[in-house]
Image (cartoon, rainbow, N blue to C red):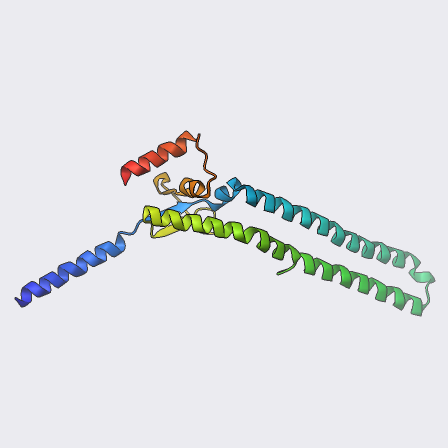
Length: 190
């Protein structure tokens, strides 16, 4: 009787370990997904326009510093010590303001960072929710991102769930025969 209990426990442990290792996985390409999302393209364009406007402002401030510095060097020999000090202080102050603006706009948690976060984060959350729905529907335990820092040396297309996520987001290409073929093969393989 004890042998049967030990054998049953051993078989149960082997079955549990087999179930643990038999996890289903897949991958997606978020760069490709985001390129198909209209709101993402619009947000990127808005951020680029804003960055270009601020970049011009920062560039103009640094150009002003450069111009003022060149004028100072050209006139330096004609200036009194007091005038030299005053002009040098002005140059330092202008340079400091230009650098502060640059940091305020383009630095970590600067205006561009905050605007990007404001516009892009809701789209990323929408994509994440779509990925989560696909994972639940297809019973996938692990989903990788092909476009992230993770290096994927080889990917079998049958594990690519990018099209399913695009469909979940409502931006899938209905005419794409490769996608439909892959989906029908996937469904047959389930």
